[in-house]
Image: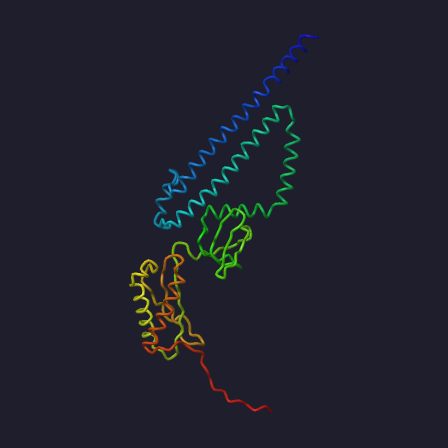
Length: 306
């Protein structure tokens, strides 16, 4: 046996002896890196859930502070859920990247040629991507909805065919319950527009038809007095956030003059306020002798058949 062959054998034996140690080091480093990344993500999520703002985003936060929603238990809970969901996605993504790289390094240490493996993985990834387009679309839409805070648990939204209260927001689906109690499961990828009826503030809008011969000024004054009286009561002080407004004649319909009354309310309070206002306006109209609008009726002489 020549000197060169002996040296090659020695190097090979040394490599075989040190391979387990290098593999163990790679695995250990991957685990330590995962712990450090998870700790950083947990710190970021905790700060986001508590409403703290990173230093780099503070100028933007200060400029928009006046336009943000007021801190309430509901918004705090939504912020916490949004932060936890994003944190879960970040932790899963980080773990996938770290262990994929570590696995490739371990295979390289064992002497595997990674070029065919990477090529096969690329082909499989393309095939899976084509087959799971809808699933990927659902997840991407869900991520943007959560990041942009388009809606959250407890909001009443109009998602097209389904309208109701949000019971759960996930990365793939959103669950609603409508006024009849029906539960709707909507894929996030199928949602093309959202109408949030409970974010920030709401408005109760009443279009009330009165008879054609009614005095418009009297109708406006009676409606305004009824609404102002309701807003002044302590029971409704937190529901009605601004002074009610009578916007005037909205339409000249077949049932009479349509007069619009608008009241700005707290989120999710608009329907309760509107129901109470209708009752009070009805009582006030009866007291003042104002007639609710009715379809006009014309006397038409009947013509005998020829």
